[in-house]
Every structure is written in structure tokens, then in C-alpha cells.
Image (cartoon, rainbow, N blue to C red):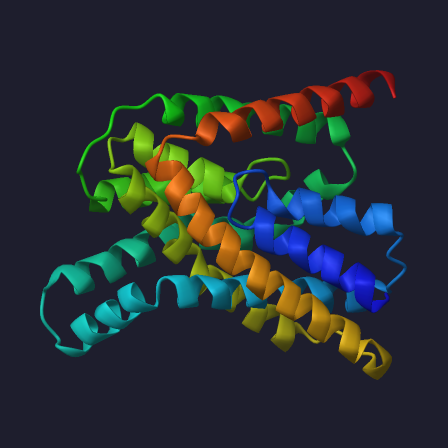
Length: 264
């Protein structure tokens, strides 16, 4: 993998991690188009590095929120920050359960079944359209909401279902304020990303080739910068009810994928 390809893939990851268009699908598609010939272990390491970059960009964008949460937790009181942290933990349960007990079954959906991915993109489009039309509220995420949103996040582990699209749409359809929905969606995934990174590092399945160090570093920086832009942009788009644009995009790509899967 050369530096230019790494930068392109980093930008793809940074943008699509926050925009509701399925980052994993776009990243794999980008690798295929660019002719990524990395061995599986190196390819996995690069993916881990890009996810680490977008997790860091989330922490930067929500640094004030993260600091308030940490400060609230250190006060050892049943305050809003403690409750929010507990809601984050609750939201993680479904995805952790699926990841631990159904990892092999989940991997079978990543075997190049384009028609399946297309159908999932169409479902994402429907969710985004419905959320875009939802009325504005000032409601916060409740503990029950947190678990339901977590179920959406677990379902979004399927290729073609956008994680941010599914979680934000579910939040909004449950009546949660759109800005609070975006905030919760982006913060709830950070512990999962770091947990997945730790799992991959400890598994011993990653391989580092010193010759690719510069390319991976460039990809990291590209993903981090693109993530900063996309995360900030997405918050504004959700607030202004602009999700319908992404619904149209997912619908078009989904229909093309289904058609290709049937007749291609």
C-alpha cells in the first residue's frame, strides 16, 4: 500500500465513520478499487489504525462532554454524568453480546454478498428518511432508550447498515432531541472501538511491516482530520434535519447493489 492510497482510505474512513452511509462497506470498497494487496494481517492492522484515528477525533470534538463526564464520575455522586455513563454502558451490552457469541456467524455476511448489502442500505435509507421527518423535541436519552439504541448498534454490525445512521435514527424516532441523539450516538461507540482495538492487538493477528509505517501514519492523520470535519458536520446536519440527503444516497447505492447482485 502506498502513501496516496492510505490517505484516500483514511479520508474515506474519517468521513463515513460519522456520515450515515456505512463506513465498513465503503472502506472495503475503497480497498478493492485501489487494489489493496496487503496480506490480511496488515490490512486488519491498517483498519484498526483508522478506527483508532476516528475514535480520537470523536474525543476531540466532544472533549468538553468527556471532561464533564469524567469530572462527574470522580465526584462519586448519582449525578447527570454518572447516569449518562451508565446509559453508555447499557447501550454497549447488545453489541458486546453479539460480538462475543456470534462473531463467526456475523463474519459470514461479509463474504461479498452485494445483494444483501444493498437491502441493508435500503433499510438504512428508510430509517434516515423517517428520522428526518420526526418532530423536534428536547427529550434526553433514557435508560430504556439507551438499550434500544444499543440494539440498533448491534444490528448495524451487519454490512450495509450504517451505525451512526441506525443509532441516530432510532434515537430520534424514540423522541430524543436530535442534537442529543447525535451526541449519544458518537460517544457510545468510543468504548467499543477501543475495546475492539485492544482485542485485535491482544489476539496476535496483527502484523506490522516497517516499510508501510509512513503510509499507515499518513492514513491515520487523514482519517483523524476527516473525522473531525465529518463529526462536526454531521451534528449540524442532524440538527437541521438534513438526513434525507443521505437517505437518497443510501437508496440509490442500495438499489444499484441489489440490481448488480441479481443480474451482475
